[in-house]
Length: 419
Ligand code: SAM
Ligand code: SF4
Image 1 (cartoon, rainbow, N blue to C red):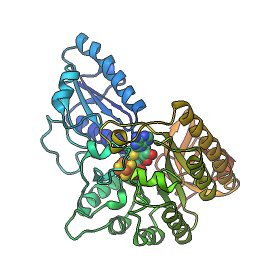
Image 2 (image 1 turned 45 degrees about the vertical axis):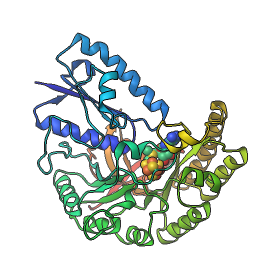
Image 3 (image 1 turned 135 degrees about the horizontal axis):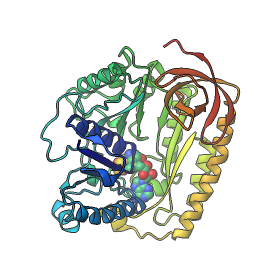
Image 4 (image 1 turned 90 degrees about the vertical axis):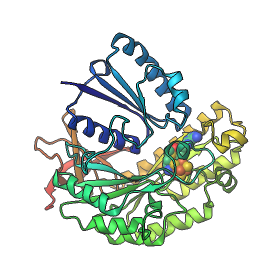
């Protein structure tokens, strides 16, 4: 039997797209190989959001050159954000790669798919569904809009049909994905929005939970906040990247909001959605970021106390406005220092937030078992581990929390939930 191997790095969107490619290959008679060496078809799903990710992709590609020499019948395909519109240049640089296709697209040997054909076979308890491709925002530092193109939303009916099929196969939780997920629908007839989509999906029998990411602070409407608050299946969890706590840096980043706008939005969200968990993204060492400007970001994290923060050091990306017009003048050492400062700060905050959950009972959707321990997530996206000999895969269980850390919780199963 022919075997495929998928190598994936990057964001949740890349992971969701790889999952879909895997399903497609399995329906075409391939089975998953456990190593790249055994594969007949090898697909690299790449990320270039920062130089470090791009370096990993390039190293991986170099290692495949000799594999292809040893096994000329091996088919190698490259997708993800390394693939730009200049495919001829890519073909010259990586002549041992047989196919190139853009992120979110189908492999060139596949001209169309049947409805449902891209869904994961194994019906994971928690599945991801891309609902809007591309990004129209052009933040000055970001390569994504150049690689993933303009925004394209999928019709509500098509998404609902996929969710119903996933639920029929056993999925309980669905996360809707988009670079700016709250831009959903503006390009569709009748301009439905994310609140409309959530309303439609909330009525699907058998579906337990709905999530979505990533939100843009300027796009998050009161209507959406109220939909999250009122729809019972929508989890009280929002991923809302702030990127910086300084208005001049936000302006240079072309984020289109101020710290004051952001703070007001967080106040509204917390007021309307009690118990909401908020996560954010931050970039340190953006061109010309002073010590004082950096401290404004640290102060904002201390003030708003997010549940989780993803911190990245600025990495100039060729082709973006920031790389063209602004000098990358914060040293690598200084970036690392700022990154460490924020990581320590956030570790303390997450420790305190999670410690408050000690002794409480939380509902967990069990996603997998590893090394004898089950794990899953709460509605507010906390990772929970528990040991038990029962079979809990895909079930909603109540777990009494006995131990907490900044990154996860541990506990014991109590009663099973009814649903
Ligand atoms: N669309 C989402 C948003 O608006 O934030 C997230 C998508 S982006 C691919 C994921 C994160 O990568 C961003 O939130 C940002 O913090 C980080 N990122 C993007 N470009 C970067 C760069 N050039 N250097 C460092 N971090 C970057
Ligand atoms: Fe990149 Fe900004 Fe679009 Fe997010 S919103 S993908 S950071 S350009």
